[in-house]
Length: 391
Ligand SMILES: Nc1ncnc2c1ncn2[C@@H]1O[C@H](COP(=O)(O)OP(=O)(O)OP(=O)(O)O)[C@@H](O)[C@H]1O
Ligand SMILES: [Mg+2]
Image 1: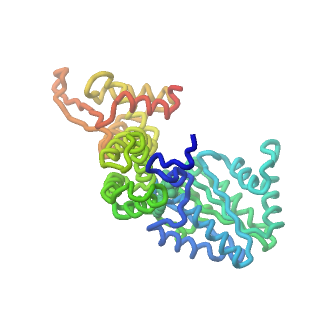
Image 2: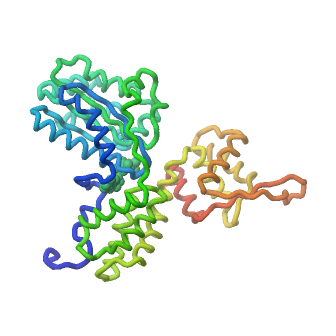
Image 3: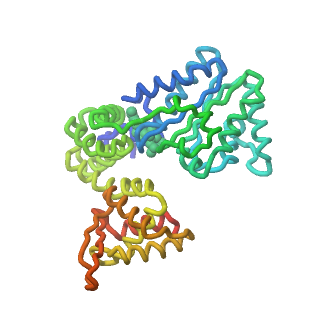
């Protein structure tokens, strides 16, 4: 079958909807691009710079950083200055050692991974940079992961890389995080990341998402297959999270559903179905990953104590919380903290609480906890998986 010549559906270019694809222009991120250019302009003169990009899920941090580095490389070529960049995802490379190795792999993909002292890594990187008179930008994406463990050493090492320098190279750093990471750094590391170099990415509003979706539709779909009405619907649906990734995911699912149904144009119904699918898979996991360990354990405890019932009592949930903590080898927090976690989970919309007269008749009150909107069994499994309590 020759798929090349036959138009089978409404999607013209699937690649343009993939996570790896970085658009040429990041709409509504002109301010952040401009800020980055102002911060990093000195590297054209061999001066190292640092910046931290902070913002919620899907606000364009990674895409902007990648596009920005490519722009800097182009400027470099125009001014006869060797600029290069490497993006390292700290979810995949979690230690100082593997991060240094990833930088070295840019120069030498076969560089041995084992049996080399860290010092040797540093010297090799310096040598490569110096030989090439290179100004390198290292992007540490999802840096929260290493910063939670304390990444001061890594920051010293990367800063130190510039120190013995012979004035013909530099190593700059961009750290990307979903949270303000300054609190995780000690004073010396903080001074490296002076406050003025924090670039903030706000959540997108519905109008901004609309523009982002529209331009992705033009890139990825055949003309006339996705109406303005559909674009509006997707923008509205993703505006609550302000998340462009969610919007593009929704656009892609709705596109695939349209094709599956054999339609030649996307219908609102396809978006509704895509929304159901995306909500049940993606966004719960995402929201869950934003909870800290204790709150996850409390949520798990609630799900476990509910069993087949429509609610859990606070007493049962607290007992289940202690058991779950022990399963994870952590010391459970006391009652005051437990109640605080319940309050936070309520505030975030995971649960509802109702206070009732104690059914045991002792005159006290008991609190019934309800899980909102989520299938309890699925939620329980999802948390257990995340905490490695089951395979
Ligand atoms: N302004 C924009 N214009 C066009 N596409 C965008 C824009 N912002 C984000 N996107 C797209 O949305 C998706 C998510 O963006 P990105 O990966 O940069 O988010 P992020 O802030 O790094 O999120 P996370 O914190 O989850 O890593 C990507 O596919 C990206 O191409
Ligand atoms: Mg990212």
